[in-house]
Length: 310
Image 1 (tube, one colour):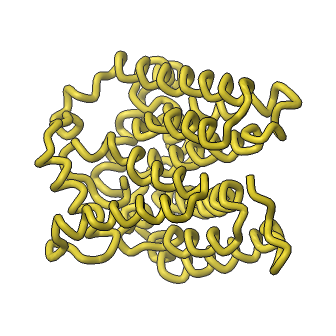
Image 2 (cartoon, rainbow, N blue to C red):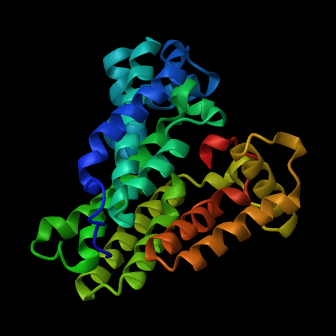
């Protein structure tokens, strides 16, 4: 990785105050979500876990880890919505911290972390995350997904090859991400890409392979036990027309454009991002480009989703 610049503050020194400032920014806008009531999805999810024992949830339901967390919340709080909202806000703040650490670890630039953090900390189109406890699955998946990438980063230049725990952690977190939501399917691809971009040694490649086995194995098991394609809302339709419509919708939400956003502009945004990565000639830029092109693929062929899933 490139050495940190000698000019300006050391990257790690600004992480805590940056997180504090962005957390305050997020809470200033999103705090009303703490008072949100249950949504129909929340009640459906609670009904699905309320009468099932923990071992049955882990063995037979989709998203077993996230459903187990929901089961524990049900046992502790019952039908009192406030603790569920507080828990989700705790995850949002944790994810902001993990996101900033991830941006900083791969870019080694506090300016890059600041810019990315401003986009990431609060976005009005992510309102489902702020008001809907049913997004617990997404929040948990992001925590484990980013945690796996973060734990994998030191192994790319050999810093993390000194002991078994450092190699086990990315694998365990990848399995937990897969046990939270299916969007984690793209995580192994990013780990392999990072290993290739950083010209990692065999130990890192082995860790990435084990993480892929754990992630895809958990997904295969969960989807075999509870096939989600039986539900029309999770049945993909692979066509260029669907891809075009979904990409337009999601990038339009990103830039607050709504229906007025054109398909041409949507694809030009992707072209500009790839061109920026090419011009930057930085490994972190290519990894970021992969993050925005590869991770949404499980969503882009499904029936329309809100921006929070993106």
